[in-house]
Structures are given as structure tokens and as C-alpha cells.
Image 1: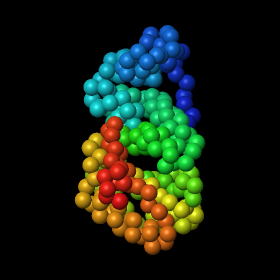
Image 2: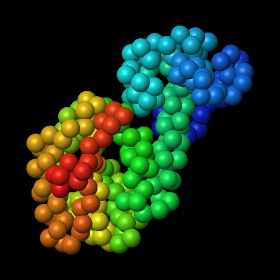
Image 3: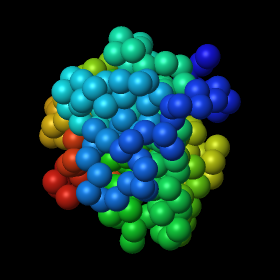
Amino acid sequence: MSASSLVLAPALPTQGLAMNASFVALPTEETTEQDLLAGLLTSPQATACASTLLQHFPSIGHVIAAEPSQLRAFGLTGHDIAVFRLVREIACRMARAEVRSRPVLSNWQALIAYLQTAMAYEQIEQFRILFLDRKNSLIADEVQQRGTVNHTPVYPREVIKRALILNASALIVVHNHPSGDPKPSREDIETTRELKAAAKALEVELHDHVVIGHGKYASFKSLGLL
């Protein structure tokens, strides 16, 4: 079964969240990450499997966002992987809803929380564009490019073309550094200069370029690079 499918095969009667010993009661803030992961798995050895996953990956977020092939190597089933995808998608949608609730520039911490949820655990770089209207409310949130572990191609002409199609007045562009260090590279800086010039020529404002790392971020505007 595809891991992206929302149609889940039912767990066996003696397995699943409700039957895990760690989840006789609902989880609380004191519930360990190991027990949280174990509660999502259908294996009779869920606790041991969760422990192994947390030892292998840098964080629980990296476990949830791992590629299906990586997770299968630890014995996870298609059902387990689909549940992980559901958890991640729900978290992203909850965070994105907070961003849509009011103008983005006055809701910065909610924006960063969403971007961390959506991008911090990706294993390859992705280039995301937030298209804003004249009131800086979110029109669209799109991933335009996906690259490698340390590079994503960005085409300023295509970015601005899409902004004009959406009738956007402003942009915030975002990319992640899978290394976890959000410090902008020389290439990041040069690309941003090119993008700013292309946007200015067509009266589209580039508000910021944000680089997402693991639990931290860099803002070109705050760094004086924009």
C-alpha cells in the first residue's frame, strides 16, 4: 500500500494505539517520545522498535518525516508509515491554519512554527514561496523546487511569473538546510539578490528570505542581507 494513501488497513485486534500498554490512558506532556512512537506502531515489539528509531534518527520529527524506504528497513509496515504521514500532515495543517488567521508579518512566530513543522525535517532542500496580497495575508503556499541535500535550483523568472498569475503583491521565500545549520550560503545570498531585483522590476515586494534549520532559522531581513 502506498504510504501517501489515506486509506488505512485496520490494525489487528490486539494491536494499535488503544491496545498499547503505554496508552491505557491518553498521553500527556510527561509521556516519553519512545512511548508516543510506540503508540503509533502495530508491531508487538513496538517499544523496542521505537527505541531503535530514536537512536538512529536525530529526533522524533526526523522519524516521522523519514522516507518510507528508511522506515521499512526498521520493520515498519505500510500501515505504520501511513500513520506517520497522517500525523505529520495534521501537524502541518494545524500550524498553517494559525498562519492564515491574520496578516503574516504581524504573525511571525506562527509562521516560523509552521515552517519548522513543514520543512525542518526534510532530508533534501526545498524552495517554498509564500504569496501575499496587499494586506500581507496568505494567498498561496507552494513548494516550487526540490533539490539535493545541499542545493535547490531557484529560477527568479519562474517565481515572479507565478506571483503575477496569483496577483500577489509580496513574497516570502523559504528554503531549508538539511544539515540543521540555517546560516545562509554565498549562493543563497546571490540568489536572493537576483530574486529581489526581478521582483522589484515588476513591483512585487520581497519581504524576506527565511532559511530553516533544526529548531532555528535565519532571516535575511534581520541579518541585513535584504
